[in-house]
Amino acid sequence: MDINTLSGLKAAFDAGPSPELAKIITFALIESGNTDNIALYISVLGNTLTDDELERLVEAAEDPNISLSLETLAQKIDVETFNILIQLLIDKNNLDTAKSVYLSARKQNIRIQNPVFESILGLEIQATKLKVVEKPDIAQITDLSRYRQKNTDFSDVIGLEKIKKQIHKKIILPFQSPSLFQRFKKKIGGGVLLYGPPGCGKTLLARATAGECNASFFNVEVSDVLDMYIGESEQKLHAIFEKARNETPSVIFFDELEALAGKREHARSTSSANTVSQFLTELDGFSQNNEGVLVLASTNVPWAIDSAFLRPGRFDRMFFVPPPDRVARKGILKHHIQGRPASDDINFDTIADKTPGYSGADLSNLIEMAADEAIDESIDTGNDVSISIKHFKEALGESRATTTEWLTTARNYARYANDGGRYNDVLDFINKHSKN
Ligand SMILES: Nc1ncnc2c1ncn2[C@@H]1O[C@H](COP(=O)(O)OP(=O)(O)O)[C@@H](O)[C@H]1O
Ligand SMILES: [Mg+2]
Image 1 (spheres, helix red, strand yellow):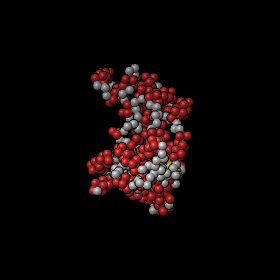
Image 2 (spheres, protein in one colour; image 1 turned 90 degrees about the vertical axis):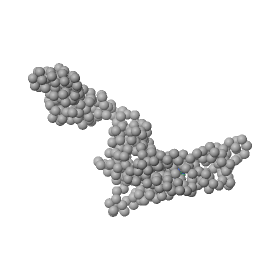
Image 3 (cartoon, protein in one colour; image 1 turned 135 degrees about the vertical axis):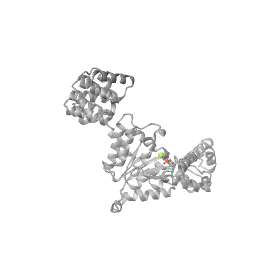
């Protein structure tokens, strides 16, 4: 390229810098042997370089102007291109440049950590030091087994007969008689999403499921996973899934999945794209076998879950956990009052009638409030007072149903965004309950 053309291109670049122009100028400068200002152009090339072009740059990297420019470039390219760049430098036996380029990128993006490169380049010290920070806390992962709930089972979950039956058929039976399912080439495991208004027994049901099928149960606190260190969440997720795969049959339970798998616009704390893709990889179990691993999750906001999580093979079964009906409300009240002094005048049918829209948690709270009233009265009067209908009346005056708001929101999604009938169970529920 002649001098005039080159200075014309430089002027055009000054007026409007573009990677295309920068690329032409870069290679013209390399050809001319005058590379003093080449950094200016190389630094804007980003991910536009083809493998051949990368190779041409690497071949010229004996020139310190170019090797320095590569350090800047490495901070602006994706990991894939970065790996090619380092590999090329190693292949050309330009280890000094490979090392300085690697460290420069590493400084910019803490997630870059390639043990193979690090050992070739003699960066082990660096690697070990980093591992101390990034290694998931194995003790914490082992500790997850403390959540194994052998003492909670379906008898603790009042009502919800339909969903208990579904869980029994689709989750517990396959675990109990795997041969039956293997004979029909049915896979055991997979993903199930429990959704519904808060306080209606999703977490309880998940724990009871683990108790019923006698599987290892890993209750994953999403906040534990969304750790502060970049890169650590992915490792932790992987470690949890590995542990579950080694202890089949097993259930991994992700409570309040939306924190991990939420759509961006709903997210409170955003999990990084890397965490999300790691989660999806683990769910898919392509490289590892997820046979015998059931992934259970719960959410109060199913419409906030990124649809990537709901595709076939992932959380493709959704179970609606509805608010308790009248009979279930009565049952929950009786269940939660067990072991407390209660007078015979309490008519649980009447209380159940007065508490439509109450969640299980609301009802359990109602009993706590009634108990408080009875304690107050015991203190005031100096007598041992039992919980009576009077205390319930006071408690009812101060409490309210919390599921109605959820149902209103859910109805809108069910009516206007009912992808593939996803929320049919919600619609059925609402239709049934608006009639009477
Ligand atoms: N069906 C139910 N049977 C018995 N108790 C229930 C039921 N639903 C909710 N509860 C009570 O409410 C509490 C909160 O329920 P939880 O499972 O945490 O709700 P969710 O996870 O759906 O928000 C439970 O610990 C339990 O005391
Ligand atoms: Mg819960």
